[in-house]
Length: 393
Ligand code: HEM
Image (cartoon, rainbow, N blue to C red; front, side):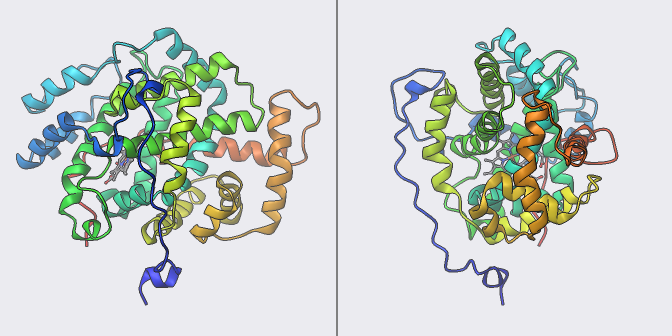
């Protein structure tokens, strides 16, 4: 029996996404036009990646990248000239970036990082496994074979974005985002060579601007909703600053201004059109979710797999959680449902009474945060590197 049959997924029909109708009037470009972002990729980065692949310089580039970490670091030596001139053009904040909003986002992230790490690593990490295009790209790329390492690299991005120095010279986000943009460009060159990936894909090339926005909504827009739902202190200027940090992140990842939402309301409208109609279970996503559960539960949080799984359920909802076929733990489910809101209320000063499970949740938040602080490993930093091949086999 195939893995798909075993999971009961073979006959599942995916909901067909509707025709794209979101107007770029709601984007930071404010242009009155409707263009489908799922038909737009990143030619500048893709050409650089194609040349690196053709001339066999990926190992040398990865070695050179080791010393290129902070935003203030000069571009390292040992890279081909065409890569250097590409990076000289893109390795900076976009002209429209607002330093004061970014500074506010950095202060906000310092205060909210524990909540954000829970929402993003457990909620969005697992949500990504029910986004078919993302799940299949990740599964069939080199990183899909080692989810612990891949999760650690993704944590590097989240950690760098939510760091109090993120966009400053001492921060590392501009560098991390540029590395990630080139990893995606490399994947766009590599995955069309994978017969297994080709058998599942509905696109000429993966990771379009639209797909990156889908992921943004599954992470950033979902976190924005969670912070408000959980009653975390998150004023409107904070929310604006948070969105601005994401607008800059999307631009650094190669998303064009005409697709980057201008306000959270625009973002929400975009998410309604591009994220929620696209979620569905896949064989690849279910396999990744199991690996991710093992990776998170096994990485020093000292909590049972059942508890972590039920926290995922709390965050992504019953339907998606059931698709993933993760282990149930009734006692943990009841505890989380009753006590997570009390825990947040106490931490935020909205309640004077600490729930009896305060230490449990506090340890959990700290444990998940440590995954980010340690970048999911025992070393201090898991570098983002360019893949040079697809998943073996
Ligand atoms: C790699 C972040 C969107 C597929 C990465 C990496 C990061 C990252 C940090 C490098 C670490 C690693 O190698 O695992 C993001 C962010 C996104 C985004 C912040 C959007 C906001 C997407 C989308 C897809 C995708 C939409 C597919 C549809 C991949 C794949 C890799 C990768 C296949 C390479 C994995 C490997 O072989 O190592 N991404 N990503 N990503 N991403 Fe994304």
